[in-house]
Image (cartoon, rainbow, N blue to C red; front, side, top):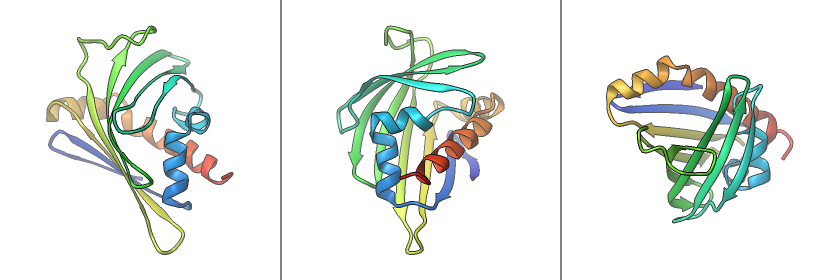
Length: 157
């Protein structure tokens, strides 16, 4: 996986031996999402999942160091190539934490001709300092671990 910062954007790119449709399904099928969308050693529990333009999701990631809650608002979903959404930290009841900045994310999925699909995830933060802080907090390691889970899941589809 490659990771780079461009101003206030963190861009993750990784190729998978899968189709764009399989990767899209892993993001949008609640049962599949719960199996992989967390770092290794953690679990995900989805309370609400409506992955479509204008839809919302609410889930928890439970890790040894604690539980985090996320509210997701989908701005554009185009099967199987695009998932555009905003993420917000929330409390256990799904109330967005107004003290924490939200993050705009775009997932681009494209099939290559060789049975490999490329996933590009762009996280837009409020400013370059916030992007660097996220990297300093270990987001690269967390994404690598999460995408390792996705790769393992895709091998079973």
